[in-house]
Length: 268
Image 1 (cartoon, rainbow, N blue to C red):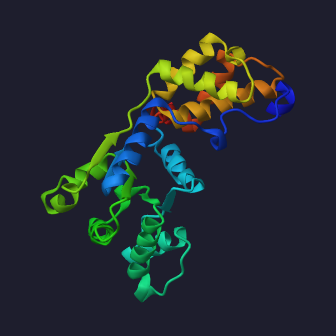
Image 2 (tube, rainbow, N blue to C red; image 1 turned 90 degrees about the vertical axis):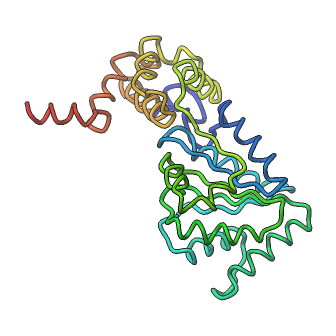
């Protein structure tokens, strides 16, 4: 519907064409630097601020000859199941008894080929700390040109700060918090996403853009979803410019209402 109305070949705000924002790019650069000396990186942030986009760009390093990336995104598992996910990501199929040995040998094989190895564990705040300790012992045996990257919510630092987990925290070489975006950054994100599909910034009028930024509250995922949903509302009416009315038509949907607003609505 959107493509036919606007005469474009690709819909805007697609996750497939996401590019790194400045703070994400800075973290990406530092993650690469720390990989040269046996890094242990921890990136935290609230849901929707861009951790998944950062993970996807790290995984894309697999397409370059000098990098190898193993990724684990299902963390509510036992230690054995998690390292099996990593083995699948490394494209090896060892027996359960040989899992650790094969992972270490594979890492050293890549090191001999002068490749830098990244191990990415997403949703790391859901990891049992006993599992993380076992993973730490495993990765201590990896070659130096390796970087273990944990991505998770802020709770991860809370768990790592406990005295019982001091041995894990003391090995962190780089940590950063992905912060919510300010309104200017969100506006820049909207303009860039529109430009990728050859649409002008005037696709959203000024009032609509202001409301989107205010409602997203610095959250990249909410901004993306609200932009796309309001553009869809405009397309349904055959309009090429998103107005305040279209954005409001999205914001009245229950999932955009706050907990307090829904309670008040029920009371009425």
